[in-house]
Length: 470
Image (cartoon, rainbow, N blue to C red; front, side):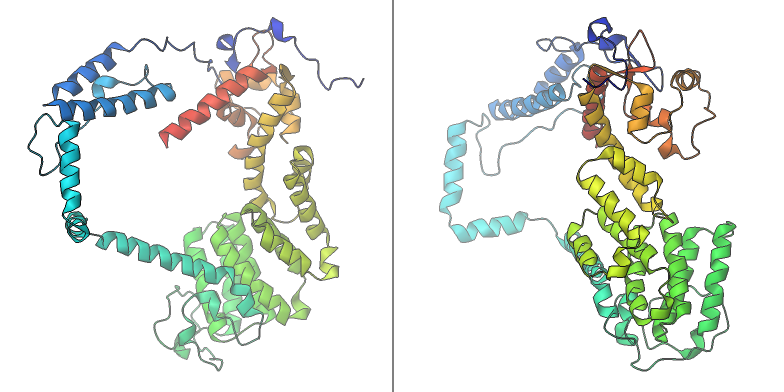
């Protein structure tokens, strides 16, 4: 029999979950819930005041059904005793349907009224519905705007197909501006570097378009401005969109254009601007096909592309890209690493995933960071269920890809509100923050050991509360 990776504490020696403490703070597990057969006094007052509004049997019946739903929902979400019922608004009174003069609102009269309305004919019924219908002008405007966004996104998804057909294409990058593009390349004459992006409403004027050398120089300057924090990302992104527009207008698909697109793509990754990054890398795939001598970074951006598919759970496009990939590109270390990362994620091999995450080349971590946060939450549940009743803190840290910090010193500092020297600068990789967000509970006898059952209960309760607040 293989030795256990940790020295487990007998579950019988554990204190009840109500006596445990969160590892990252001074929280405690909630006490046992009050008996379900009793109501809070404020809730009884709330019910009485609600019925006082009613006038007649029909209104009392409707109010009873409404209150029943409210109380059942509060009981289901464990909020019946914590809700301030005095501050809750009373339910609205439901009045009799139009055309009924019976104040008691008996079910027999309501059925007769319903049959009378049905006998008036289908046409009258449709007229009544039209007359009572709301004004749909705002709804139609919202639907049209949503449809427009969906069409734009679909064109971006299919962008690489349009760019790979020839060297003179490329208007899809500007989405809807192709009708203002000339079939012949325009040679720009503007020497002004800074230029805000404006969607084309007419044929472009050569005097307002910058030539290739100006665009290449301005892209380098924007990289410097970003590195030195001279400008924010919103302004820099707008400037890069103007650069890409001028490249497309002049049908420029040279190595200078590739370098500008690559710079823009890397900055978008650092800012986690994934929609903008997708448009950039889609256009880049077409540029690489037209420039065999400038494909040095193709493997890097193809790896980013595959990671983007993983981020969106798009295995169809990811499989298609791998199938159509050149054999030499498939053997590149970046591509091999990305495929191994995808396999670990699909197989729920959390240990391999976190090991590969630490080895992610180039700027792939900008995308994998989001995958890592999702995976840690799922992996935590697996570890807690597999290692019941208890498990050391340092073992949990190792399994979830955190830096093992020794446990006790970190928890003492956290309880005193002091920062830990070994904590990473990034909040999303901070163990104390993770332990607090995921309600880790320690056993009473040893704060460096996690109580698996109490932690699972606290985590499930916190997730239900978050779902209710949404």
